[in-house]
Image (tube, rainbow, N blue to C red; front, top):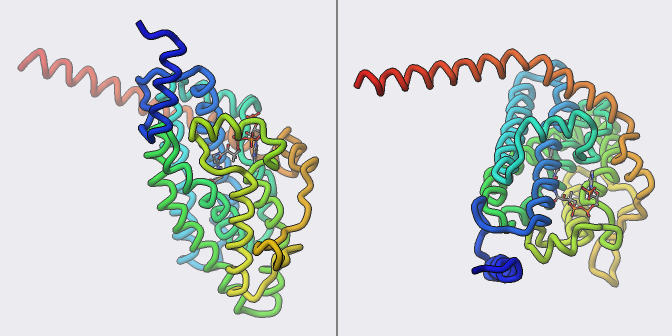
Length: 316
Ligand code: BYC
C-alpha cells in the first residue's frame, strides 16, 4: 500500500520528469492550496481588470478603437471563466471563490487599484500591464498542473493581441499633437512602477516562490521576470520616442537598471488601501448582484433541458 511518503515521491518524480499533474491524481494538500490561491487570484485579476477599461468604452476616440476595446474586455471575462474552471477542478466551488473576492479575503493584482485617467491609459494598460502579464504568464503555459497550463496557452495567445492593441494606441498618440505626446508620456510615467510591481515582491520577500519553483508551478522568480520585462520595454519605448522613468542602461550588468520600487506602498495597496480598492470591490459586488437573474435563468434553462432529455429517454 502507498504511504504518504511514497505518494509524495511519486508526485515529485512526475513533476521532475515534466509529467502534468491532473485533477484526479494524488497531490499534497499544500500544492492544492497554493494552486487554488494562485489560480483564483489570477481569475479575480481578470474580472477586476475589466473595470478600469470598462470606464472607457463610451469614450473611445473612434468606432475602431471601441470595437477593439470591447473585444479585449470580453476576452478578459473569458480568461476569468477558464481560470475559475481550472480552480474548480481542485475541489473548490465558483460560489466560494467569488465569495472570497467579494468579502475581501482573496487577493487580485495590485495593478487594478489605480485609476485610468486618460485615453492614453488604455494604451499603457495594453502595453505595460498586458505586457507584464504576458512576461509572467508565458512560463505558466508550462506549469505543472494540467488544467492551469492548458488554460494559459489560450490566454497568452489572446494577451498578445491586447499588448499590440495598447502599443498601437500609444504609437498613434506619440505621432500626434504636442498635447497627445504629453498625454502619452504622462501615462507611461504613471503606470511604469505599478506595472513592475505586478511581478510580486522581491525574491527575498516572496514567501511562495521556493516551493512553487520546486513544484514547477512557477518556473522563474519574480525578480528574474521583472528584469526581463524592463529590458524588453526599454527597447520598445524607443519606437515611441518616449522614456521610462528612472531606467538607465548598465554597461557592467548588460541590463537596464530601473530604480527603487516602493514596497511599503505595494503592500498597502495589496492590503486594500490603494487609490481604487474600494471602488473596484463595490463595482464587482454590484455587478454580481445585478447578474443574479442571469444565473437563475441559466440554471432554470439547464434544469428544463435535463427534464426534457429524461422524458425523451423514457419515450424512446
Ligand atoms: N498584487 O510569494 P509571492 C492580467 C501576493 S493581471 C497582489 O511572490 P506568488 C490582466 C501573493 O499572492 C495579472 N498581490 O507570491 C487582466 C502572496 O500573497 P499570499 C494577474 C500580490 O504567488 C486584465 C504575497 O503577495 N496575473 O493578467 O509566488 C487586464 C507574496 O508574493 C502581487 C497573475 O495573477 C500583486 N501584484 O507570486 C490586463 C499571474 N504579487 O497569497 C491584464 C499568476 C504578489 O501568500 N500569478 N502578491 O497571501 C502569479 O504568477 C503569482 O501569483 C505572482 C506572485 C507572480 C503574482
